[in-house]
Length: 196
Length: 249
Image (cartoon, rainbow over all chains, first blue to last red):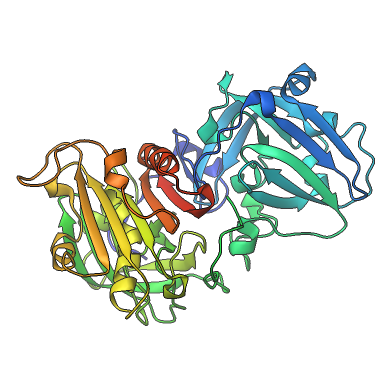
């Protein structure tokens, strides 16, 4: 027990995963400078385990049907933000014509960042390529022009400045997953670090 | 953000378990920041730049957890944190205003293997601190100070005014160290005889390009500093950043 510490319980604390606290602003977690990605040069590419590539330009992405999910996000650095609103394309839409039997996805970003997750965590309405946040174009510091949004996992899995997804039979750890963070990252099971 | 950077990776923490930490000393840094010296039996050691999680527990079992940068290099069971009070925060006011030597709470760590400097990484190293972003960078300076030869360090430390400087006396004592180039940037109030008050600018970033760069501070500061570093010709792959916002700490 910490002598004299009373704490400040928020009414919505019960909606939070263990060890998280509510924030109303939107802190930034990233390992280096913010890459500037021009929309004219933007591409998003899915590469399957046999090397087949499906690619979209910025214009082609915007032409796809979009969704407007409202989701809670949880950062491994312990802040959570509830009821954030996004607009983007469901990964189900992008995977419609992709033929794969792979189990693992490695997500790539401009600037070299990677993160890994099971392919099934990207499908069935669980993930989006998001390009608008709270009604505005997604700013570069939050991953614009477009980022992955996979809110049921800690937010480092929602790769900023996303450029593509490589599918494979092997699970390949991404950037933070190689640096002591959990391979899967479920906030409700508090899977922060590699041995959690 | 990039995994192409050279140099040995610091060890990452193996066991995720909370350890009891006892406060053995407190030092005031500024009117709103304090250093806590902790004794943590079983602490596994850390690399300069890493952080840890603090867990406070209220009498009814309610807990609150936050991450804080470690301010000093590994020293057995001894761990130092410097905490800046966040207005209306939940944990930092307790750590800055209420904690006394002898008090206990729990810590978990070390955390983070990217924003870290090990003497084997060598130099030159450029450190760019905004406000309380000095804390993990000071751990690197202190690590460098205790090894014989690990390359040149440049520390750019941006504060609003002299009253907000952490570790002032220690930094003055390092002013003549041949391995350290200390450059203070005062954004609002500059003491007489120093650089004129004003934000970090390109002219502050002159010098060698090519070594590793660590930038830590509030998000706006890190963004501005990163832009200046890129304009000065630094390779984005060499720039490691750590940001914090006013996020309720």
